[in-house]
Amino acid sequence: MSETTFADFLSTQSSQIPLLGFVFNLLLAALLAMCLSYMYTKYGQSISNRKQFARQFVLLAMITMLIITIVKSSLALSLGLVGALSIVRYRAAIKEPEELTYLFLAIAIGLGTGADQRIITIVAFILISSILVVRSLLTNKAYVDNNLFLTLIDEDSKLNINEILPILQKYCLQVDLKRLDESQNNSELTFLVKLDSNSSFQSISDELRKKASSVKISFIESEV
Image (tube, rainbow, N blue to C red; front, side, top):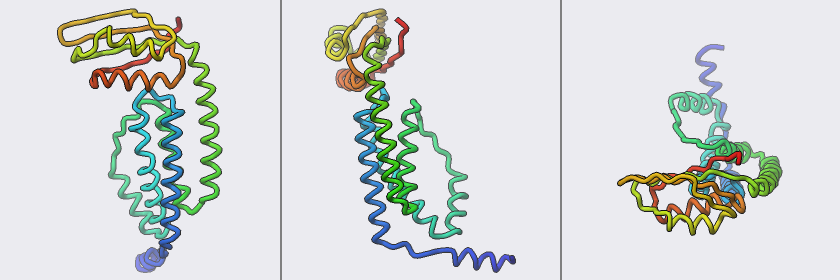
């Protein structure tokens, strides 16, 4: 095949995207991603700010759907996408494997709706979501008997022990202070805590950051 023939082949490998179908797929991707955001916020096990992280799912799914819809209509655009992505480097800070799992699920929603595989995408999303929710509920029960080390590092010294203890006692079945280091501009406290539920992670983090937004919070599993 000559160069001219190949160029003609590329130019003919395109199709008009139906506007109504595109809008429907875009809304479907947004709806499924919103459900995913709610599920991650409610049942996720990440200690980080799940609400803020979950806000990205809708945009990620819709952008993925848009890209797949466009490139599937043209071989030339598909080749161009490969070249464009080869020069883009992402530096997203993924702190926990669970975050990566939900990101892939959001991308899968965009891929499925962009490829017009609506029924398969909906069925797969329902099944995967059900498994994630059941796993979260089972894991949530397992956390009740777990002892964890909670370390708080406050570089501005805005927190004191009298403010921290009421917050921990509100969400923990047991609170024991194991270590306290204080200096003029820094304080570090380590507690041995037993949480009443897995949702206490986020509740404790939110309330502590209301008192001191710069506080660093770390939960570490204990063998005690």
